[in-house]
Length: 193
Image (cartoon, rainbow, N blue to C red; front, side, top):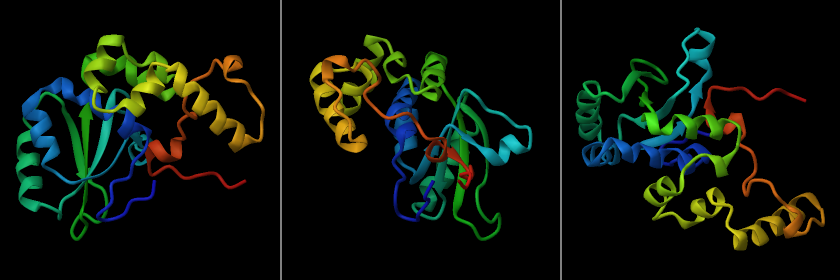
């Protein structure tokens, strides 16, 4: 993940899983929207190497210096909420600015996160959930519902990217490339070829 001050790192976790947190209600959404988010992911290898595993959680990296009052208020509030699991300094504990908050997925999102890990985007949500979470994001919705019109566009992209000549009616796969762990999990190092 490329973490930069002042920029939100947009990845598949952001597109496909953050909307599920709407299940926690308007107060959560309002408070969550008040803090500056730098990146989100489905894990952190630093914890895994320490034998701490959060499998049904989202990792939200916050900038504690941008909107400091909102950050402090959010942290005081979230620590008393059912969705809160853990938090820790992401960079230097004394002079750093990044702070990780680990949030439990709502139970309705357990299947979604598991299917996401396997890049099975079309199996992540029921029709009702798609309409609830993605009504304001038609581009993501097209991937999840395997929109037939979007399939034409996606297959064209694949043919261009991989120099192939697949016909849209021959293509049955997901309408997005598989997730890359290096973009969805914090502190994961790519293996050199």
